[in-house]
Length: 173
Image 1 (tube, rainbow, N blue to C red):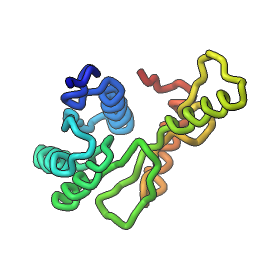
Image 2: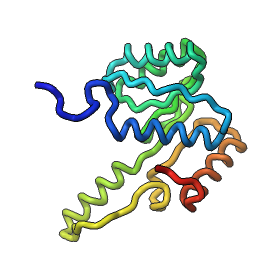
Image 3: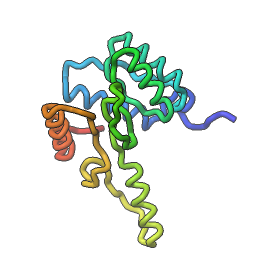
Image 4: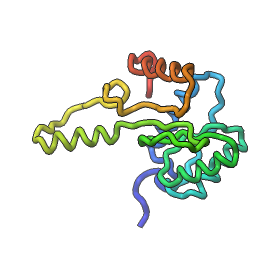
């Protein structure tokens, strides 16, 4: 039976495409001269071999840091990064910084927090249809980026970008 979700067969799922665009915008905001390669949509979040191949190919094209929205595919990306001397930024679920030299850090998403909020409201009988904002400005601490072993200069830059996003000095589309 064919998958009815648009873009699913190629991995170009609209929220995933949106994340890739925002990642590029953030990279260019932090470093305007940065070159960002087009995303590799493998069509499978769990295919270790495809993920490794994507990293290896992009490393050959000059890429040095790769963002991951893959489940088991993260292992393939880390394998490719180790072989090519590049780095992987994991996400969007919280993970621990490890001793793996190829793992540069991770992004955090408040998807789980939003789900927990909705379930608690439903169980308590207080659920109502309303717009509820989550994300950096929510103050939950559930969204953001953690860089493993980053120096103070990089951490300060990340903190400033977070502040600018929250203050809407930077517009995220």
